Amino acid sequence: MNHEDNAIEYEIQLTSLALEMLEAVKDRQEQEKLRDRIDQLKVEPQKQGKALVDNLSGFRST
Picture 1 (cartoon, one colour):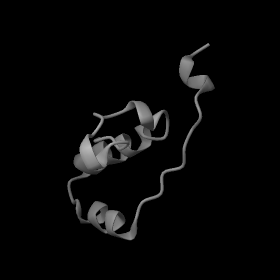
Picture 2 (cartoon, one colour):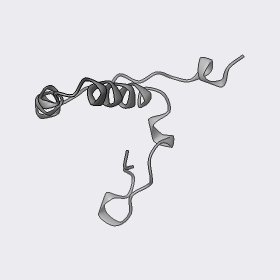
Picture 3 (cartoon, rainbow, N blue to C red):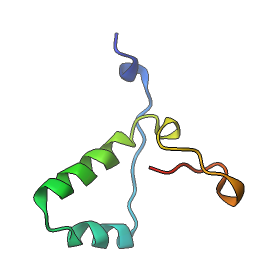
Picture 4 (cartoon, rainbow, N blue to C red):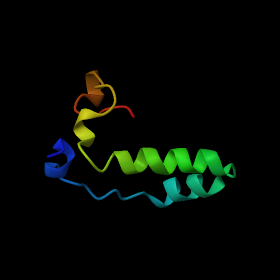
């Protein structure tokens, strides 16, 4: 059994500003990369990116 089969899948909600910024990307390949990266965040987002420090402690970069 694959480890991801047991993982919780989160819902990703984008702000209106994020949606506007994504729509502004005209390159199709870049759009696909961004979409894929957003989709990856649905599974175990807390294990992705680098942990931030100081007043951003508890958040991660992507």
